[in-house]
Length: 325
Ligand code: DON
Image 1: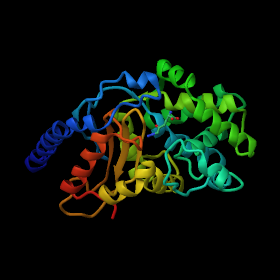
Image 2: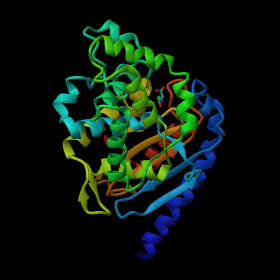
Image 3: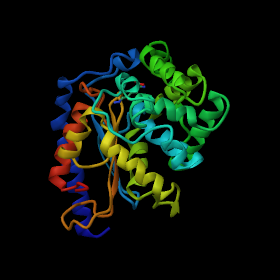
Image 4: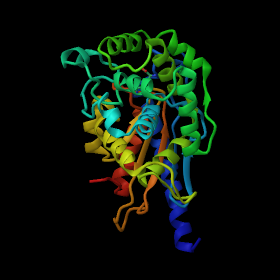
């Protein structure tokens, strides 16, 4: 590494560490998800970030190595996996690509809009439908497909946090209601309890900011894995997933996030945010070749998004001039 590049690298990490400490206190403006009892026991003041560049270079700060469950971030992976198996038209016949402006677990639009097709794969109704579409006759088979898919793209073997899974499984009345409604309207491709088992298990896969930053990087590069020099995901599916992340990934705060940060992103109620910067030609941007970004900050706002994480991203996007617009 040349002297100038080394100085820039040190400055980036210095800035990141400073911003993480600055925004950590934002945790007090939200709280950990309490409807999943196991998540309510998390320390809300954690905040960590990992950024990965196409060269594999990582920039990290704060609690970036702490494992957390993917929750809704997994919806991006199951959607991509279902599209890779069935093709995009088959999946979009069963789940739409329209934002709702409603809460992630809202039921209202399923009945208000006949015939009850879920609006998008990022809300719970759409994600439970997507999970039911994964190949295999049993939850076990569907999950094996998803795990193999996860391993193929991240190079890591997924582990499931059983405590979080059981804690949600026992309290998942709203998701059960959504799944029963989807079964009634014919959108669920398997039995209710089987779809829920797949969906809640994928939500309980444990990751660190490094793994979601890597997935973000692959999305930034339209499915190309730069370190392996291999196209690991189809470009058209990845572009569709990024459009859904931008329009629906932060739920009823997706518009504000697009306006204030301007990057495709997906949040989870455990406090994770997976986002990315596509390659750009901005001369002063530190990530001209693109990057993937993983954030963990478990105190969430009313929309289910990490309070400190969103504030940190807003600050970074402004300071580093990283936006897709
Ligand atoms: O189904 C649920 O409610 C959770 N397992 C996932 C929801 C979620 O992560 C929403 N994100 N912000």
